[in-house]
Structure formats: structure tokens, C-alpha cells
Length: 264
Image 1 (tube, rainbow, N blue to C red):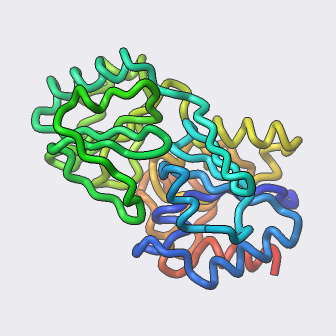
Image 2 (cartoon, rainbow, N blue to C red):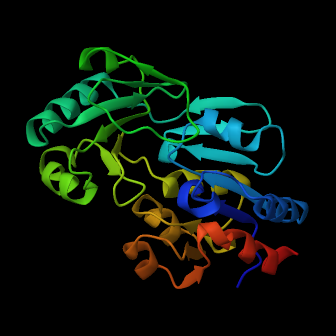
């Protein structure tokens, strides 16, 4: 294996434990990795404010790809850059089609600075408390959005996207972070892989010099792009099948175990 210069890791279900915490062992492994001169990128569907809460002022990562690519967050400067906003007309079209094809679905949107949700959106994530309730769908359509989140009454994102793809697939990217998670709908071309490729090009890093970790379907493009990829033991079946390398589950600090072997 080529000596890695970049480590890219998903957060929920991968680097974080199931209670959404970063263990002491993982913190130590990240410090060792960065002390070895290796860049660390958090690649997540989460917004930048959660990165702040998780990592604070501690220099454990270099940068974060947030919203699956739509936002780039620079840890040192706290700069939030919305790179791929979702146009208002697309937002309206998506909400209309979802409402037609998935009755009783609920909606929320991420602006990059806060989340807005209407009464039908029943998913409540951990960590992120900067959430604003609104009374109607029309209030969700902000000037610039990062993504739309869709709560599904049957909590089956695979089935819901299969129903929606024929009418929406040409307009948006759709991912989900767990088997029973909401749909996350963003602008075309938004993926962790695309954002990581841009970062590495800026840094002069070849894909062969990147190790990526993940657990969910939205990690698959990034895992395929990186020269070396690992799935944690608790990963989605499709992720386990697509990766040659597996490590222990997130609650056993699987990512930290690999980093320790490489850099300790």
C-alpha cells in the first residue's frame, strides 16, 4: 500500500460511536495521524455547526466536507463555504413530486447555518440543536439551500428513492445515511467523492495516497474513489460488499484501530 497522505472518514456510524460521541481512543489516534503529517478530512452529511461541537478548537482534522459536498468547512478559520446550493425552483419541484409520490412525507431543509423543519418532519438528529420550526412548506424555500431532508412514513429510503428516481433523478442527487434514515436531496454532482477529489487536487494528492472509511450508501462513491477503503463492521450490506478492507465497528473504534496500526 502507498504511504497515505490523506485520511477521509465519515462520522456517524463510522468515526463516531452509536451515541454520537468521539471516543478518547479515536481522539488520540487522530492526533497521532496528524502528527505524522497526514491530513484528516471529515466527510459527512452533517452541517458545519456539528463539526464545531464535535471537534471544537482541538486540531484533530484539517477540513470537513459537509452536507455530502454542498458545504466546505475550514476548521482553523471557521469559514463556511456553500459550494453547491440547491436552486429554489428545483426545491419546489422536488417537494411537489415527493408530496405526490410519497404521501405523508415530511420536509426539512438545511441552509448551511441552520435547519428549518415543518410539522410533518418527525426525524430528530443527535447533536444538532440549531433547528427552527416553521408552519408550512412555503417557509422552507430559502434563497439558498444546501439540501432537502425527507422524512418517510415507512422509513424505507431504498423504496422511496426507487419511486422518486424516474421523475427526480435528472435534477438532483439523493443519498441516505442509514437503512432507516431520511432522504437527503442535494444539487446534481454533490457527493463526498467529488469534494474529496477537489480537495486532493488542490493539495497535490493522488487517489492512491488516500484512505477512506465509511458505513453507509452515501459513502460508496468516496470509498470507490480512494486508493484504499475500509468499511466498519456495522456498515450497510452494500458497503461491506463493495470494500475489500473491513475493520471493527464504530463502537469498537474501528477507524482508530487502523490508524494506530499505520501511525502509532
